[in-house]
Every structure is written in structure tokens, then in C-alpha cells.
Length: 344
Image 1 (spheres, rainbow, N blue to C red):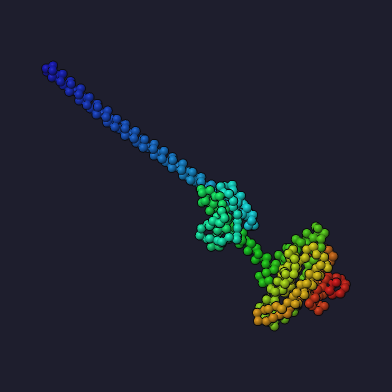
Image 2 (cartoon, helix red, strand yellow):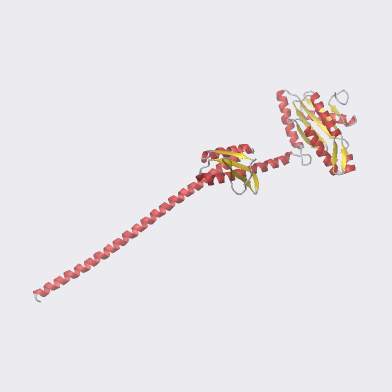
């Protein structure tokens, strides 16, 4: 084979090898570039997922903090059954958590149930719970970023106030006689024990009046039970009107009433009992389509003059009432072993 032909074949071989080598290198570089791009894409995806997880973590932290704030506020405002104490706990919580210049609980401003209204620099947020308006929160200087949190906290306060009012209503029903709106016998007994213990500790006088409506059965028989109920309501009103705020009155049973007079001696108690008796005797009680003239009898006993124990004091006031009844009714009798029926 001629030399030049061999030389040409060598050149062709070299060129072919170079071409295929270059193609292989290019293919390798392309594969490498693709791998780099894939790794870069994976890395960017990981970074994005990391950022998303970080954002979700912050959101969950904010949500957890909000829930914790609500729990903390709920725990604080439900620790009491007093509205002022509940609001004080709410205000202290708001002052710790939010930027706020002033915050007050008010009842005497016009209510706008749709949006807070502005009045003399304050905004008024209505406290609502199940369509019930409980009052308003007056506030000013609230940072714009805290408005949503403040709204949530105010709603929590509204729920707490509704709970307190429902509790007070139930408690009031439990201790208040439904007909006369006076204390029930059970609550009267509890208050009597409190006042008796206090009188013992302070070595003070304590008097008790037992008041019974004269001929009450006759009223029911002649005029009906509705008239009898009207008479009891009016008698309860007159008793409450003629005693002091510190005195405790209640319906003891049927047509019988009891009045506890702290820091009152026998003579003072007799004066109170006579004032009540006269007021009732002089009152013309309107009962539906009839007018009633009602009288009462009263018995008086005093600690420590007449008794040293609660039960004994009750028994002796009841005994004095019995004497007033036996002596002709429409009168007052103080307990005494001997003496005239009036116990004077």
C-alpha cells in the first residue's frame, strides 16, 4: 500500500477518533449539566420547602400564642363571678399583650350593634353574646395591628360576662322566693347563722321578728288564692320598705315572714315590729277586683337577752308570735317569761 494512502488512513482515523471523542465529551458535559440542573432544582425545591415550613411554623406559633392568650384570658376572667373583677382581669391581660391607651367597661352610651362608634376620642365596642347586649367596651389608642386580637379578646370577655350574669340569675332564683321576691327560708337560715356568729364574736345584740298574716286562710277562702298571693306580695313590699338595708327579711313559710335585725336590742326590735304592723294595718291592698284590709301579728326575741343559741332564739320569737296571736292578733309581742302580751 502506498505510503501516502496509509498516511491518509491514519489522518482519517485520527479525525474519526477526535470526532467521536468530542461527541462523547459533549454528551458527557450535557449529562453533567443536566445533573447539575437537576441537583440545583432539587436544592431550590428543598429551600422553598424549608421556607414554607418556616412560614408554617411561624403561623402555627402565632396561632398557638393566640390560643394560649385566649386560654389565659378565659382562665383569668372565669376565676371570679364578679363583673368588675372579670373586667379588671381582661384589662390587665390587654395591657400586657396589646398597645392600648385606655380601656373601660361602660353601660350608658348609645349602642351600635353593627360597628364600633367613636365618641369623644373613644371607640365603643358592643359586648354581645347570643344576640344579648351586655354593655360596651370603651377604648382608645389601640394600635392598628392589634385590632383583630382585641376583637377576639372582647368576644371572650362577652362570653365571660354572660356566664357571670347567668350564674347570678340562677343564684338569685335559688335564694329568692318567686312570689314575694324576698329571701327563701334556706337562704334566710344561712344569713341568720352568719349574723348570729357575728353577734357572738362582737358581743352585739341581734333581734329576730316572726311575722304572721292574721286569718290568711279566710282571705283565700273568701277572695281566692290569687288575692291571697297579691296580699303576700304587698306585705313583703311593706316589710322591705320599713327595715334598714343591713336587715335581712325573708318568707319563712306560707303566710309567715322573718326579719333579722343585726345590732338591734329588744326595744329597738319592738319599735321596728310595731312600725311594720301599723303600716300593714293602714294599707288598703288592691287585689285584682277587690280591696283587702289585712293585719299581721309579730313576735320578737333578742340575743343575748332571751337566748344564747340560734334554735332557742327562733323558738322564743315563735313563742312570742304565739302570744301575740292568742292575745287578739294585730299586735306585737316580745318574748318574756312573765309580763303583758306586748312584752313591753
